[in-house]
Structures are given as C-alpha cells and as structure tokens.
Image (cartoon, rainbow, N blue to C red; front, side, top):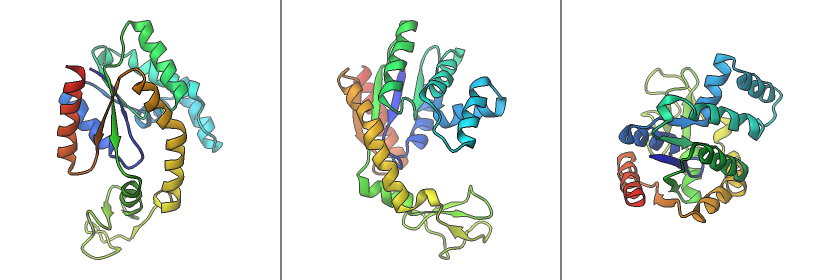
Length: 218
C-alpha cells in the first residue's frame, strides 16, 4: 500500500504514521527522518540541506525531493510506503506523481487527519518540556505534572518552547493553509483523499484510519 499522510500541525501525524506503518507492514518515511539521515551520513543532499539550515533559509524543494526520491528507491519501499511530511506543497506533489509514474506505480490513498484549529492550538500551546531532558514532555490539560511547572521524572523545570507559543502555532497554521491544503485539493481531484477525525485516543484514531484505508483501497 502506498499512502500519503496529511494534516495540520498537532494532528498527531508522526504518532499515527508509526502505528499505521507497523499495522500495514510498510516503511514510515518522514521528512524529518530523511533530513536527519542525510545530514548525519554526510550525503551531498544532506550537506546542501545543512548549508541552507545554517544560514536560516528554507531548504529548496529540489533538495527535499531528491532525498525522498532516493529513499523511495530503497528495497524496503518497493512494495509500499507511508509518506509523512512529503509532499508539503503542490510542486512536491506533482513531482512525486512523476517519480511514481516513472516506476509504473501510483498512490493508493491520501489520509487526511482533520483537527479543528482551536484544538491544534490547545494541543501544541499546552505542551511543556523539561529543561533537563527534552524527552520528558507534559501537557497542561492532557497529561499535567503532579506539581505545576515541575517534571515528574527528574524534578527539572518545565517550560514552553518558543515553537509552541500560540502566536507561532497560528503562523504555522497559516503556512499549512497556504502551502499544504492545495495538496489535499490536488489529490481530491484524483479521488485519492479520505478524511478522518483525529480527535480521541490514539488507538481510536488508528482504528478509524485503518478502516478508512481498507474501504478506500478495497
């Protein structure tokens, strides 16, 4: 099965992608992982990406596309994959179609995780991270610490990252509406999109997603 996963920031794409890829026995290919792997391995594309990132500039589409194309050439992606974070804009979506067309294959479906905007802000802006250990993450509503502002695990100070502020989240949503929503419309025109609610427990959303994909792909 060849799937693209889309949805706004805070929709739980990374979490759902991991579960879905495991359930479908296909590799989870995320943009973040592609960048980290290429940079850590010192590939030509990784070096290019790092130069742009160090300069505080956006990595051009051709670099991201190159990384995705290389990853799709690997043997474990031959029978299927789940793309998370790619394509991020209309140009990337059109090039992905060309890449797949050259291989004589096509996407089976595009899973759109739907979350109300206010819920996105609540999910992200409510996160608190431990200054001692960034893997210790809490949420003021969904998983609050026993003592406000104090990490349950190590006693470190909990703080809100700049990226998680409400203003930043709303700006990220503006970028999503401007750049990624046209991708959804592009795939809707191809009859590929299935939209599900990403509200509820993680396991409930996964079950919802699996059922929607089964119905979509037959």
